[in-house]
Image 1: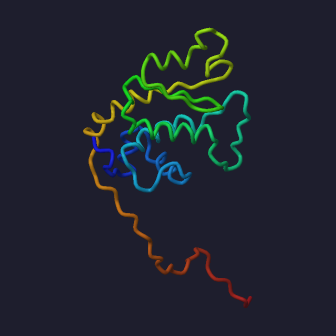
Image 2: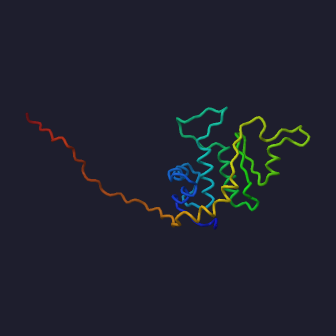
Image 3: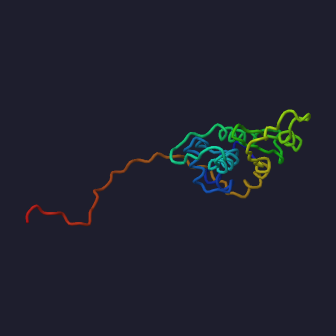
Length: 180
């Protein structure tokens, strides 16, 4: 699997198991660049899962367009970084909380994140807050097999549309006469 291989928006969506509209939405929100790579498959999976999530103690503001929250941006960056991190294993886990993210690459690291300090005086990072646990290591480990199954197609070059002159609009109602 070449991490520098360019993929089409459809290939990213197909590999992530999503509709391509999610990729275009992520582009529009600045989550994904216009040129797509293998790491974008993991990023779009995390984005799809977290973009609609509302933390229990925070109000949902769906009526206005908002900037991406810091916790969401942190999760997306951590997911992208995990794809190229040499310490990533199938056991790599991403925890997302309203206050930040943590990545653990082994069972021992996961236990350290989930447990308080050995003496019990310091709480765990996860204590007293809601946390989402994402198996990004498994998702990354599955990428080579997924990429071999999807159609490899070079992304289309974005062409600018030339504006064509529009014809006069016809109406079905006859023209009115000013004479009666």
